[in-house]
Amino acid sequence: MTEDSTLMSTAVDPSNVVVAVKASPPSRLPKPVLDGAAKRRPPAKSRRRAWKLVLLVAALAALAWGFKHLVFPSPVLGLEITATVRRATLPVVVSERGELESSKSVEVRCMVEGNQNKLVKILPEGNRVKEGEVVVEFDADQIKRSLADQEVKYKQAEGKMKAAQGEYEVAKNKADTDNKKAELDVILAKLDRDKYLQGEYKVEVDDKRGALELARRDFQEAEEKLVNYRKMYRQNYLSLEQLRIKESEVLQKKYLVDRDEAKLMVLEKFTKQRQEVELTAKAEEAERAVQRAKSTGAASVDKARSELEAAEVTVRLEKTILDNWKKQLDHCIVKAPQTGILVYSKERWWDDSTRIQAGAVVHYQQPLFSLPDLTQMQMKVKIHEALVKKVQAEQKAEIRIDAYPNMVLHATVKKVATLANAEAWFDRAVKEYETIMHIDDLPTDAGLKPGMTGNVKIFVKELPDVLIVPVQAVSQQEGQHYGYVVGDKGTRRREVAVGDNNDKFVEIKSGLEEGEKVTLDARTRLAEETKARDAKGEEAVSR
Image: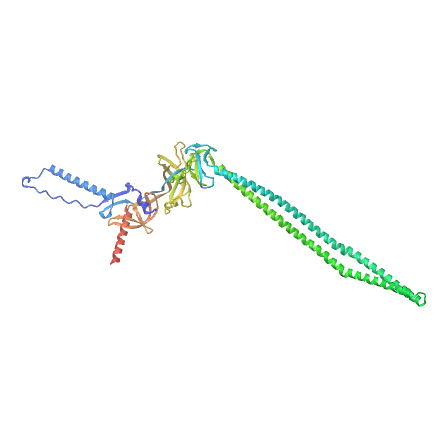
């Protein structure tokens, strides 16, 4: 059941309507007063003629009064337009207006970036164009200048990238050389330490020990000889001077022994330790130098790599911009993607400044034209939110195009939009859902064009053997439905339960019986009752 406005806007089926007129019987006409010269009664034929004339005038007046109140029914005047509750098959049909469009249409948009793209050449609308044919051309002077500037930037970026590549290779080679030199220094430092500890020190110790042993032997021999020299002195074989010389030689030998012992002691206790510490420190420093060389080299390489990567990114960016300018230049010439009839976009049909024409300025992604395939057409219909729940895919429909009123096309519902149409900006309260119907029997020679409008009837279902009344017989208030039943005791309101409906009749599930009479002014009656009840309530409050 739709809203009351929908219920009351449809026509009344005259085959199911009974007009009952309640009128009081006509009063008797007063007898004519006769003067003295005409006391004789007129002939019967004349009296009958007079009565016929009076009755004709009364009938015409009654017809005029009845016509007036048929057009403007009012229960107060006693006029009731009724219909009989009956059983019948109720076809549930959704009727809407729709517009033809191609089901296989290619739309072409402006791909030149910016908001000031000027058209310099277009083909006339309605032409049949072939695939690859030039349809639209844009002014490309500014794009060509930008393209030349970008080519210079790209070349400069390429030069910097090549220089960065060279610096990167140099940094890698230097880092590798420094690392190998530092590693060699470590090896040499360890060899120097091992050579001293395991070679030079041992040789030197052996030399000093050997010299010390020789000095000790010489000292021992000198002491032994001195003993003999002293015996010989006592025996007067030697003089005192000669003995003193021999004693001096022994002291000299003793000095040599002490000297060699001191040298060996210094070598073993101090020189060896100092050399070992020094050479070990040099080896460790060489190892640390290796780490520094590796870190320094890695840092230099990373820096060179970063500069190279930045240069490569710059080159790619400049190349992307260059390619984009080239694409923009290519987009300045728009060709037909397929063969078809040329139809320019009328997205903002109310604004002449946006019309696609030579000299017009368009923006990026603005629709330019479309190429509809006239051999594959469909009907686009916007279904009101109160009715869209009834419409489903694969339902059948009939289409009557306004330009060809005698042609009936058959169609099938293909798609019902999930979301309401957002184009109705002028009335946000109206929610409509776009529905697409494929035309099953499209005539190839009918001359149908996109944009033609027509009436669409979608056959939702049929309800066999149900109680129905005209939609004017039911009104709604606060979620309840009411009808007014005419009986022997007058007209009474009755609550009813309704089911599906079409534009003329509504299904009655309960509240009415077959054969009962219902008035067709339910909305007016319910409004008057509500108004009277409200007025009575206000009067009671005022008291």
